[in-house]
Each structure stands twice: as C-alpha cells, then as structure tokens.
Amino acid sequence: MYCIKRKKQWSEKVFTYWIEAPWVARAAKPGQFLATINSPKGERIPMTIVDIDGDTIEILFQVIGKSTLELSRMNEGDSLYAVVGPLGNPSELQKFDGPVIFVAGGIGVGPVYPIAKKAKEMGNKVISIMGARSKSLLVMTEQMKEVSDELLISTDDGSYGRKGFVTDLLKEVFEREEKPSHIWAIGPAIMMKFVSLTAKPFGVPLTVSLNPIMIDATGMCGVCRVYVNGKNRLACVDGPEFDGYAVDYDSFMERLTQYREKEAIALKRYIEAEG
Ligand code: NAD
Image (cartoon, rainbow, N blue to C red; front, side, top):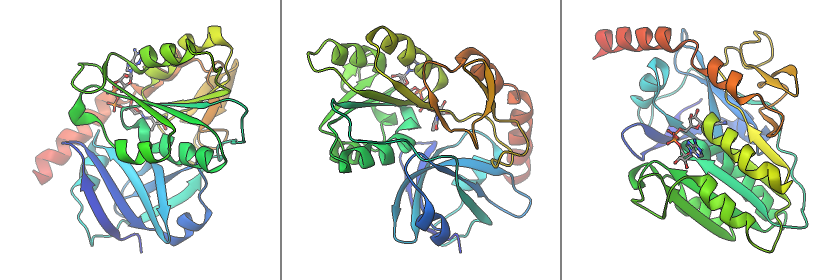
C-alpha cells in the first residue's frame, strides 16, 4: 500500500510522484488535498492532489524542509507509511457564462490543474495563466495546455513567455472585451495578495486556495487558522478555498514563517545524520 509507482524530477527541488492509494483515489474531488506520512514517526505533510488514475494519485511537491527532503529521497517501489485524505472541501465549480481564469504561481500549478480540468469538462472556457521565476522552474505546462482554451505564461526573468509576473498577464486579460466570470488563483501568498488587488477593481469573483502550516489537517489542532472576513477559519476543514477578497494575506504570510528557525534546525540535523 502507498507504493511509489513512478517518480519524476522536474528540477533540483520539484518532484511528481504517482502513489498507489485506492481509498483516496476513489473519494477525492478537485480542490481537495491529502497528507502524506513518510515513516511511523514522520509528520503529516499536506500535499496537492494533481490527478487520479485508477488507484493511483499524482502529487507535486517542492523540497522545503526535512520531511520533503526525506520524501524526495524515496524511490519507485518504496512505500510511504500513510496517505491521509481526501482532506478539505471540493471546489465549488459550475458552468459559468464567461471565461474562467486560472492563475498558477510556481508549483501552485499542482492544485490548479485538477480544478481547471474539471471546469473544462463542465464546458467552461478556460484561460490559464502560469508564472515561474525562470524557464527551468516551469512545470506541467503540457498538462495545463490540454485543459485550457488558452494558456499564457510568464517568467520573472523573461527566459520563457512574457517577462514579468502573472498579474501583468491578468491585467491584459481584463483589458479584453469578454468579461471573465470567475478567477481561481493558487501560488505563493504574495502572488494571491496581488492577484486580489489586481482583480478587485474589475469586480470578478476570486477564489484562492491556502496552504498554511498544518499538523493534523483534520480540524483538531488549530494551527492552520487563517483570518478571513474578520474571523478565524481553519484552512483544513473550512477551506482550503476561500473568497480571495476576504483573506488577510499579511497575517497569513506572517504565520507561514513562524517556525522557519525550527524547520531549519530540523533540516540541518537530518542532513548531519543522513548526509
Ligand atoms: P515563486 O516564488 O517562484 O512564484 C511563482 C510566481 O508567482 C512568480 O513567477 C510570479 O508570477 C508570481 N508572483 C510572485 N510574487 C509576486 C508578486 N509580488 N506579485 C505578483 N505575482 C507574483 O513560486 P514557487 O517557488 O514555485 O513557490 C510556490 C508557492 O506556492 C509556495 O509558496 C507554496 O507554498 C505555494 N503553494 C500553494 C499551494 C496552495 O494550495 N495554496 C499549493 C502549492 C504551492
């Protein structure tokens, strides 16, 4: 169970794994996520569900700390201790009158893909905007092309597509005659904040998906609380999707960094012990 059937490395730190997890595969819907546990004493790592093929789930992750480094060192044929999910609520998708815009920043493309895919299956016109720091960090462009009527790409350094941020491309889409009906934006918190500032004057509803630090990811610990519409909400059970205009991005960003020192110590200790 939870066997890594296939592994793909996109860049130094970004990987796609296909993992056998029949129960999660049968129940998961676009917008939901899962948690992986490497070993019996391991922590739960919240993960994007990119796609499902029979009993196999596809996940995309970036090496950030000890647990993701440990996961990246596992190989095809190895098994994870556990896969927990699906977690969170599915996306509220429908057939919209106008185009639906999907904005994906960096590896935020992982959770964007299944939502865009479903939106396209429902008959929506899908305009996708992807951004990465440079060409070598762009992932899943072919998959996104398949589910989009139009795919626009930017890189911060101009090494591929338009030079600039996803928000520059978003502004251009707003200048068109056809008014979009809805926007989904997933990526770094700072990107979601600026997507909301860019989109607000145009009055188009915006959904963002938040990935705060989580421990149990089932609503018990409260660590993933985010401030939305003046209230504390738990990203794991109330989200992960929220109204993109109601999120307090500054407190969200502050909470994301609160364990950075401890995470660095755990990573240093792991590298000292394992090499
Ligand atoms: P990154 O820092 O390279 O940024 C990706 C893109 O976001 C940039 O190329 C740019 O187009 C846009 N961006 C960045 N700063 C911006 C700004 N100030 N204004 C407008 N656009 C801006 O991304 P990365 O290193 O691949 O990291 C991905 C991030 O996505 C991580 O922070 C991760 O936590 C987050 N993520 C979130 C989810 C989720 O479910 N919310 C899932 C996966 C990843």
